[in-house]
Image (cartoon, rainbow, N blue to C red; front, side, top):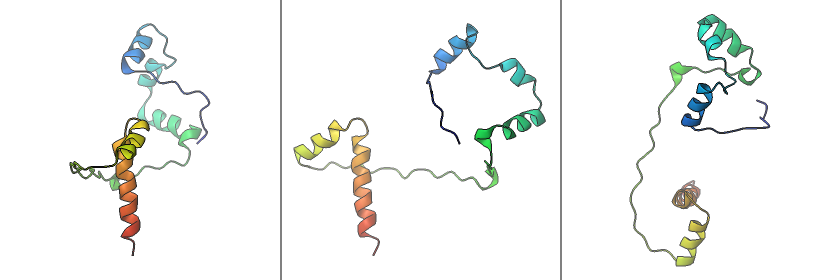
Length: 107
């Protein structure tokens, strides 16, 4: 897949407003008028979709394991280091602990 040079993000509200004022470059009427066969042909000719095969018959849903709540004491400087890395610092701490766990349980 080729890398896009310019990616812009919009909220659902912004997209709705763009459609309302006609600023969307999507031709929804043209899209709605296509048959399933035409849609499949259009998707197949898209270079971003080339070679992509999705077999939904073998799809699985892997639910994440619930996390355990832990109250523990850590050195203040260690905690501050992780907090300074921003949102998701607890997830990063968990990833480091998981890495250690998996490394030590390989033998």
